[in-house]
Image 1 (cartoon, rainbow, N blue to C red):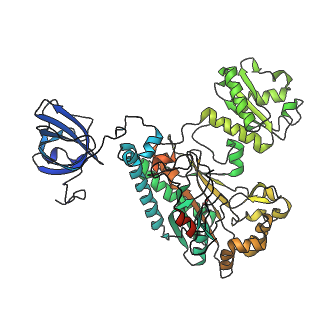
Image 2 (image 1 turned 135 degrees about the vertical axis):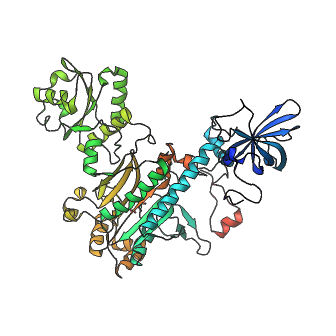
Image 3 (image 1 turned 180 degrees about the vertical axis):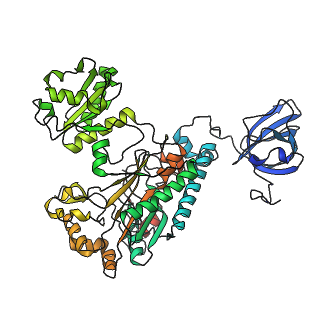
Length: 578
Ligand code: ASP
């Protein structure tokens, strides 16, 4: 028989056995999912493999327990009238006259391996090999494999070549804390696990690979969250002789192809907006475009306000349809959230047919009242929330309230992709008074803003861009600096001295002296993309062996101490456990 799922031990996966097999005597292998005795002489056994479940009828007693591994030889038979099981794909047939061979016995498992049972996560992680047998992870990891395969194919079709870059490497410029690996042969020296293949891929451009990609494992020693693990997988790419638009095109095509395979839907053209617009309309650089509740800017109407609370560089408002019904307790919770995010307060106005209802309403002049009452097409029954502060802060606070009030779970459709462009070059100033790079120090400033680097650096835009899906940042990239004069200016703005630049990135800067093509790139998280497609909001659900929130691997016990001999070899001294 010429089936791909057949092996020397089995003729097919159980899920494929249907009425067309009736009459054949076959071998199938798998785990005992369930067994039922029917009197003394008849037993039913549900055999499970990765494809589904098949009922096997055994005469005599059954000497197996749940999760035993067995090979069953039996005859495919149509089930008797009235015993069809429509919930099973194989529910019209069963195996009869079965002979059973036990391939492996199993102790009682710590939790039932069906989808219905809720099992707490630490038990699932400790027994991940059992959790993996369950349908959820089987489905998620297979989805992941098909997304990755699709991405690879889409990149190859666009003439990108996959190149592997080292895991034992030197510091990379992403700015996160690094994992270090002590060197045995070079006592007292360390490798660094790459936060990304950033420098390696730029060197590949110098090396003449004008379209590189890699399904790359990246490692960052940062606090873990639902959308973050120490190690994660990126689709990493870089290309030469390209513009930002070229890169966005390559990535959009690959992601759209993966989306079609994973969801069956064509995502259409991805939206694009500048960072400034995203902040203004959504109060974040990760705008979730699945729902409205856009922020409005009322700064102008309030420019001459007498009300102290509104005397601020920016006055921003958010209309909440139907929100006039919110209880005082709910309004207090929102106010508290605004305060925790740094706002001095949160003003609220109920829109009624008699005008605005709010403790502040009587202090407003006519223009202010009119602008609030009509904001965003407000009608009686709505609530208007207002934050007055610096533009960015007011926007961010209302952006967070917008999510609290309206955001569906990240993985809920529709899928809304948006490219956010023109990120600021610098995100602020550190304790030493040096600018901090928003992306990484090789990011090209926006060509129109080069003159601002020395005069007004915080206004410099960069040629950096992010791809956002349903409010989650999928990935980022930028056009890189390939000219040493611009690179020196950026290093000096960041407070990186020529000596430090030489010691950290000297090999890259050195390589650039030998003919660096203009280049740009991008990287996005495959874990996040698959999680959204799989309908889960935690990337641990799409990773075979994830770590807990505190970075522990409950199955292997890592991180662990190592034998003293190994410590000595690495010139490491034991310390008391922290
Ligand atoms: N290396 C960057 C990152 O991992 C992405 C890029 O700029 O290509 O975020």
